Image (cartoon, rainbow, N blue to C red):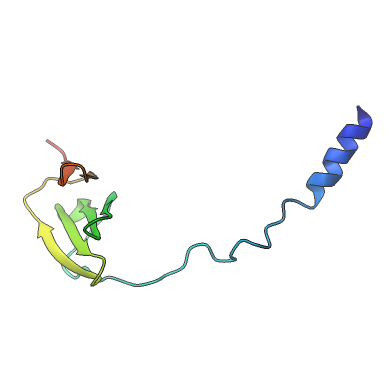
Length: 101
């Protein structure tokens, strides 16, 4: 049993081989300005077919729609009360937003 434990310790000492993994898995690709948005941003949802990013701008009481192809704001959904959760339902092409009552 002691021999098995020693072999495991020696095998784990060097750790897994990660030479094939990129050093920077996350990197900044672009900055997309949202000039009239202030305050906290909460959740995000993505429409893969339409290449749209939905951003719950909690502090701004809006959901921002960004076209990821052009990397520009496409639309701002106003009249919301602290939108927090957003979920895009691709099967019915609908955006669901959770907000305070």
